[in-house]
Length: 363
Ligand SMILES: C[S@@+](CC[C@H](N)C(=O)[O-])C[C@H]1O[C@@H](n2cnc3c(N)ncnc32)[C@H](O)[C@@H]1O
Image (cartoon, rainbow, N blue to C red; front, top):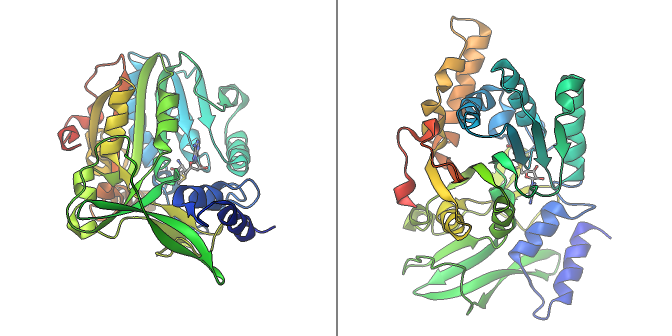
């Protein structure tokens, strides 16, 4: 049975012949046989469908290494990376920690896709010696009483979300049905409540709300002491619900092009959306963690001394480094569209990454 047939079967099984978008997205991205992330490992970079910050080179991880270094002044030297993609961030970070003479106790990876786990193992085995390799472990859940850093780059925006449409206080849920040869949107009245009080505008707006964020926050809750660094496309609820964004943010990527019909090409294109950081701030409070900072990627990396990693002179490497910095910090791209949020348990520290332009008050 193809992925499309599997989804059609799931739709037929549901009483109202439609499924929530979160189930469609879960199957499209993570179906065990045909999901976009579970059936292959070629999503990233020029040959794939999209770039992430660590795909351009190692300046992103080196700069974030400065933040890790500061945290490790007061924390046990463990890292858990959620959703490690190709394993490139893990590789560059482990190398950077060695350069900084920080001896990691463990580097854990929690990765949902078996195919990506295999790719990560291959890259790390290829590039690291046994001494470093033995510190890396693939685990399913955050260990109870973990102390250290948790890192997640572009993981929340890959978690299944539901989609809603609101107009003058009336909310409908946009579900997925099937007609003729394709999938279609069907809107149903939505009478339930969201976990927290969403501040919806009066005017018509389509928006995403992910019930899956709770799962990751429940994992974070298990730590004894530490910092969780969340890096993702997204913004505060106030910005998300601005009239300029009334069509919502759900989108697909295929061969480095954005495609707006997320219901097409199922299993072959990525599906993503902007993370609502106000929702994450609410969940932070629910698990009794504290927000240490929230800002955009450009400010965060600049606060951490990003430019120090650009090779000086006029060599080809210098220009490559500049181009990397430009990609990471450009205001119309990753620099402002991506936000960084740090939350913590038992670590009321001011982090260097938020020393200027901390926008926590906007959440
Ligand atoms: C957009 S990719 C980002 C990959 C990588 N962090 C990077 O920046 O290149 C999303 C990653 O999160 C993984 N993922 C999605 N949901 C997950 C979950 N619940 N737990 C762990 N990994 C997850 C995906 O399999 C994939 O590796």
